[in-house]
Structures are given as C-alpha cells and as structure tokens.
Amino acid sequence: MQPVDSADDQAVDITSPANPRVKWLQSLRRRRVRDEERVTVVEGYAELGLALDAGVRPQLLVTCPEIAEAAELGLTGRARAAGAEVVTMSRAAFTKASYRESPDGWLAVVPDPARPLADLDPVLTRLDGQPPVVLVCEAVEKPGNLGAMLRTAEASGVDAVIAASPVADWGNPNVVRASKGTVFAVPIAAAAADDVIGWLRGHGMRIVVATPDTVREVSDVDLRGPTAVVVGAEHDGVSAGWFDPVRVGRDATAARLPMVGRVNSLNVATSAALVLYELSRQRRG
Image 1 (tube, rainbow, N blue to C red):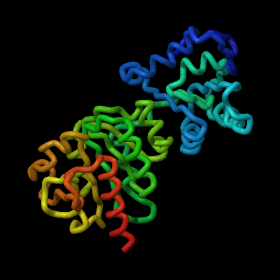
Image 2 (image 1 turned 30 degrees about the horizontal axis):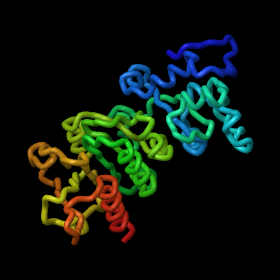
Image 3 (image 1 turned 90 degrees about the vertical axis):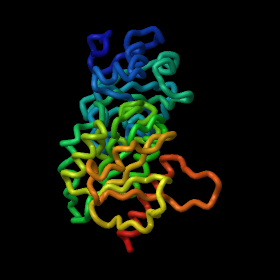
Image 4 (image 1 turned 135 degrees about the vertical axis):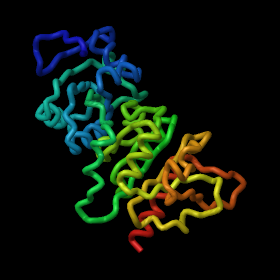
C-alpha cells in the first residue's frame, strides 16, 4: 500500500516533491506495480467526474488548489463521499506526481477497471432485447489506440470490450487518459486469445475479423445478430488462430473495409470505428 505520512485521514498537505506519497504515485507508472496493487491512476477533472458517474470509488484523491479551478472544487466532496482519502499538494509536488505535461490539478488512484471474462456474462443480456455487441482488441500495443477504441465503443453502444493477449493494459494511465474516462463506462476484460475465443463461442457470438487480407467487404456481412468484432495489433493485425474454423467456428467471417488509395491498411482505432458504425447502421436500418 501507499505510504501514509499523516495521522489525518481526511486531508494531507504535501509540499515537497520528494515526499514518499509523491514517489508512490510515480511508481504507478510501471505496470508491474499497478498489477501488484490492482489500481490505476485517473488524471483530469473531466475524466475523474466521468469515473465517479460510473460508480468508481477512488482510494485516493490528490488535488492542487494552486492549479485547480475554483468552480471545480465541488468534486472533492463527491470523491470523499465515495470513500476517497483526500490529499492536497503544492504545485511543485503535484507536477512531480502528475502524468500530464499541463496538469489541471486533479489526480486519483482507483481500482483497476478490468474484470475477468466471466464477469462480463451479465452485460450480454441487454435490457432492450437487442443482440449483444463485443469489441475484441488483440495485442494492441499503443495505449492511445485502446483509449480511442473505448470512446468509440461507448459512443456506438458496444456492450463490452475485451483485450485479447494484451500488450498495453487497461490500467495504463495513458489508456485512461485517451479514453477520456470511458474506460470506466464500458465493461472491459483481458484474457488470452484462446480463452476469449472460447468465451465468445460459448455465448453464441458471431466472430467478424477485420482484416485487409480478404475480398469480402464488411458491408456485405450480416452484423445484426450477436456479434464480436475483432481487430488486431497495429503492425501484424490479428493472429492466425482467428482464421481457424476449428477454433473459432465455421460461422466466423473475415471482412475488409473498402479502400481505393494505395495504402492497404488503416489505423486500428479507425478501422474499429468504421466497422462498429457499419454494424450500427445495419441495426438502425
């Protein structure tokens, strides 16, 4: 656990950048530490507000009154009501603990948002009766891409997002930042690719693999039933296992996006967005 340097468990004023609490916050930049403590960092007023709206209960809230806007200070009460210890820091200490080049004075330590695959089972039973939609991101390396896909997933009504054989972890502060806090609004999980395939098949999901290496366009695929859209790593795409009918089922489909330019691939987050909105278009139609 983080070091405690005051008997007051409501607020601790920290002025020195060398304070042990500051060093602990810096240590959470390392995945090993985050995994051991099962926490991550949310930085930014808007991101923290969305996390609280999603029911997140912060362990620690750090604010910098020298930087934070006075009109935003009501967020402190919300975080404390959710069970957070509240710590105030000087500008020098907060800047040292911050992950951003231009911090806005808000930073919180929260539980790791990822959950086991089995915990996603209830989200596939939609209250509106519509077939479920899952986005699978295999071995995506760049936190910015994972965060962007979460924003698209939240905007397009995806029921869950799964990192298969993940490289970048959901708790990476840059994923949290790039997602604008939607990492807490969309149910997420992480597991080995084989486990993800087994889980999808167990729930009767049709697997649609986005790849440029096929002739069938995504608009020609029926996406109106229970569907899992699979996108792959930035450089290598999805692994060969997703094309094995024995493993993924004979109903699995490879589909490509139509492109007329010379470049035969799109950014993975862009590709995911286009496929998800084609799915949304078909269901609205």
